[in-house]
Length: 392
Image (cartoon, rainbow, N blue to C red; front, side, top):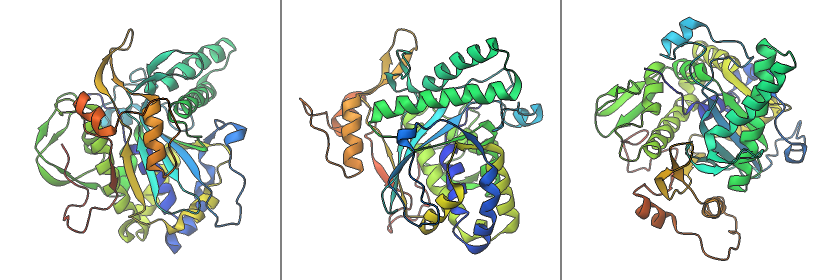
């Protein structure tokens, strides 16, 4: 069964960030200066240099997980790797963004907020491509560039990298016009990244309310607490068939997984273990692409105060999970005005004035049958004994 990774964006970036938490880990961060990069952030959105400073500017980071059969350098993934992932061959899959999360970091640091955007949200794409599911923004931008570059004689890894760069620009611009947020940084993780990162940390504890057996994703888990890694981790975050709210329940899975994964990565058991740390660094080098000019060392140093309770997850409000569309099948109905109002309130900003008040998140959930958009701390409340919270 073919798998599409969904939650690896935050895990990849979290892995990169927390290398700066302890002395030994910090000494290894310099090895990440050679990460693959892409020229995707517009000059007006680029942050001023803070070299040598611990000042943390307000910023928004777009995290994406790519259903790509190439590595961060644009080279095809080996067939033996694809076989382990049940991912077919290099001609399978596609070039959509199967995860889209905006990570907001407030000025001065403090608690960060990760805002999930359902991949099937039906929105106006940037670049004049019309209205489609938001995960197709990357595809449209990439394919147009791919065709033009191929006609110019560009081939191989260079073709893949340049086309991917164009796709990323379209995805970034689409998210900006949909959410009203300016994207200052971009981080993408490829197909093998989530698999390798979850293995590197020794697995991630999760908890399910009920047992599941899903032939589409391959997910086959008992109820209760368990630890998943590698292919099992992909199956856990990929399942949507058989869940009450489809993609929204899948997002809840992602958020529960990432909360637990961050707890594991931030723990001394990972950062103080030379073998695990080495695997973690190798996985990040192999699979993560950042925007060009991102000062990894400076950013990691600014984030050295990050703790396991320093991240909150939220999901944008939706109005329907089954919106018929002319060309894209059923999509997730969203209202850009309502989404922007929700984000402004979430980030503590005054909501923009509108001619009519946006429907409440609770009202949207009631009419759509979907759970309301909520925020959840990365660490359960003191009354909870569960690491990540049980999910559907």
